[in-house]
Amino acid sequence: MTQIVKILESRKLEVERQLKPLREELRDINAALGAIASQELSASEYQINRMQINDAVIEAIKSGNKNPTDILDYMAKHLNVVTTKNSVNTRLYKLRKSGAIARGKSGWIVKNKKEAPNEEPLRVR
Image 1 (tube, rainbow, N blue to C red):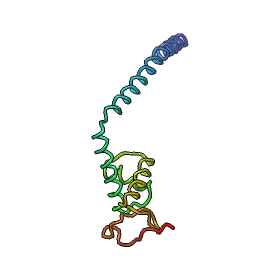
Image 2 (image 1 turned 135 degrees about the vertical axis):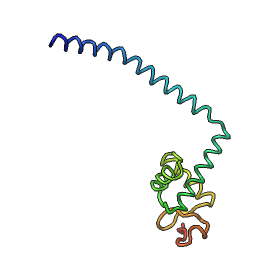
Image 3 (image 1 turned 90 degrees about the vertical axis):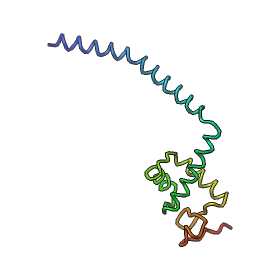
């Protein structure tokens, strides 16, 4: 019985040694495919994607999400928009500069009074 165990363990090590270069090659192939896919995103597709994320951020704020983490979660769960927290923070900054949103006392608000009637923007001195 111990001879069979030794044979199987030896074969296992041999197979693992053979798999190592294949796993490395697979990782390299996946990295190359990812790089190609990201380069194929054209300027117009980028513009559409950016606008969809901006719209999603505003929609999340309208739905009562006031901080970046809640906005990110809402976008993923309810709008099927997957992005990063850093991207959300960047969008918040740009949307604030454009005048679409403001920083309220309890978080982000849409500047249109009809959509955010209970909160005034913070005054920055």
